[in-house]
Image (cartoon, rainbow, N blue to C red; front, top):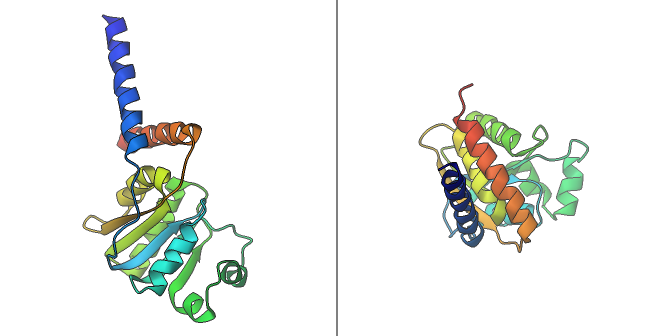
Length: 176
């Protein structure tokens, strides 16, 4: 009986991993939102956020998890962001160190700006956990558009991220 229980649990875990690995999200369609949120950490994320702002699909961009030693001018130079775009439309967040603290930093910025729709930009394999954390921190009714940056993750990356997603989901369900 116990062996069957653990075998069933393993199958649920394995099929969950398979579903996670084969259903990575894609880039979003040309949907307008008030803002674009970019979580640092992967290639192409910031470039995608800048593309969204410059194409007029979002008014402002918030980059969460920027290293505190990075200066706005260095950021602008590295990502070829014009001074005008930096001044009007880009805010750098220096407080977050992981996905959960990204969500808190994003929630504070969204509350301050009073935005009700946002495009979330992160890597495809990171989107499920990022979306779960960010959506849990924003006010109910906030529209979140998932905009995944396509990558080609290896099995190890997918396995680690799937386990982090499970841990995140379990910890979010625990009473505080």
